[in-house]
Length: 162
Length: 298
Image (cartoon, rainbow over all chains, first blue to last red; front, side):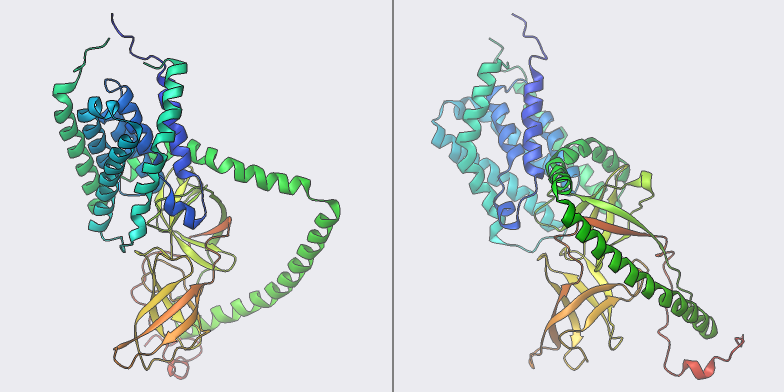
């Protein structure tokens, strides 16, 4: 059976757009410190669910878009997202079979890698006074992973995204 | 069932290609600012998303406007009319003063100060990089915005434009940790640098000797040195001066006068910046005696 290529691709695009909106949505300063890495979470989900459709290229493109939206150095998030997508693609079969709480721990590690890479690059170009609060999004991302996973899986199943 | 390893063998290669591409982009963007057109194109792509995010806030403001009662509108209207009357009375005096100032400057043969054109813009309510202090405004190169334009609100200097897209721009606030404004204490003329700290209500003034004349309550204005910001706009107010005898410099904090977190309407100053001036000489106190009416060429 030959898989049709563009099968409900708009659902994936819509979830990524929603993640982008959530990332840009203005929050009070204390809440914005806790803001999870929405785009990263959604990308990790689609890499796990459809590893032959969503991969390094999509992650890289979303990263570049995020760089333009946030006014960071072009390529900074692109690099971090591509690396995390790569790790996810290499391990997807194993991650998919683990229970949700273990997945959350793996997501913690993945988002930590992404955050450290972004912070590292920001630090290298000399724009960053270090604060421990920069690691908070990693933990909120982990806590929100089960929710994101269940919602997106429900969407994927009911809308039959393949 | 799709093949398990559809792309498997190329994954590493793809990562390498994309990582190299990202590194090349970052180097170009950071070192040479060659990517301004790419950034402008991407900003056009992202503008609908930003507009979408901003929409609820716009709608909220519209609702508040259309649902406010007639009496409150009338009250606001009369208050605004009073304010306009007071300000236009002040302006009459100002134009006379400005003329006087210009002729005095001609006598002193110092550079003339031209009032620049000011254009209003609106902020988009979107969050940017949490590590930095930046804002998005709804005017871009199609409206004549160029990188480096100063940004004001009604109370003082806010920052400067750094990235320009066709219909939107990103501006760096004066509180960003990588930002510095050349300022002057308006009371004494003491020059200093106001550095951003990353906190929204704090600027630091380093490198001021402990015996310098600076007090709590002093207003800092732009000095115009460096040619980026026009001179004489209020920037901040000194809130604490701490002299530590063991340190060579005083530690001085100031609060920006502009409402950086609340203003939605901002002003762009077009035209006043001009070419970088070769260090404008502060007029020495003895100058008025030397300069004769009519202007000696010497």
